[in-house]
Length: 221
Image (tube, rainbow, N blue to C red; front, side):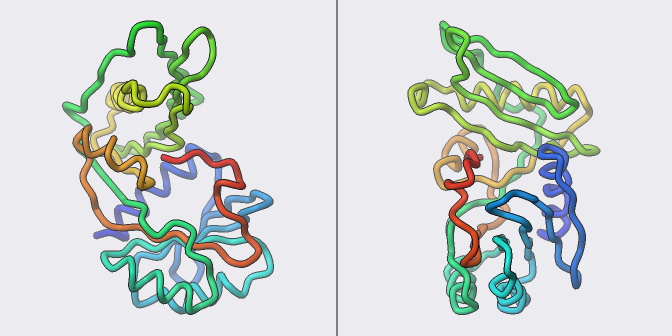
């Protein structure tokens, strides 16, 4: 069940970021192709964690491993024992039926802009500057949220809800029915308030050649 949902989620991720992927020995591997992160292995079977972590640890280029699990502490210990650095031990895989998703209007002084490339992009602007933004890729009946973020000076004003509501509204026009996303610890409260539900925990790790995702400049969903 989790494996199928992750496959569906990853199709949205690679569409949103213009990436490619493949299966190696039955495991999903995304070619991120950044100087600080070449590949990311995604594991959904906890029995495979030690073996795959060992492969990622031994690679010469900067690579990452993401493990979907219901036992994050156990998985984190196995990953560390294999030689990886646990970068994010407490992310969350989430989903929601999109019908009826809240779609609040922006606060006074903010303007929402929508673009399609064909990935759906939303920006919330104030005085012409970006205050919040996000992407959503629709693949079949799935909509995958990606790179949802709010500038620090504009937080606690409900802009994340505005971004998500606008993205979902546009995705529904394209026939999407189910939303999927990976959330950071900071984002979980927002998504739960919008009716998203947890599927599983997510443990993210990197090998010795890869710096943290913050150094890569990646926003947090």
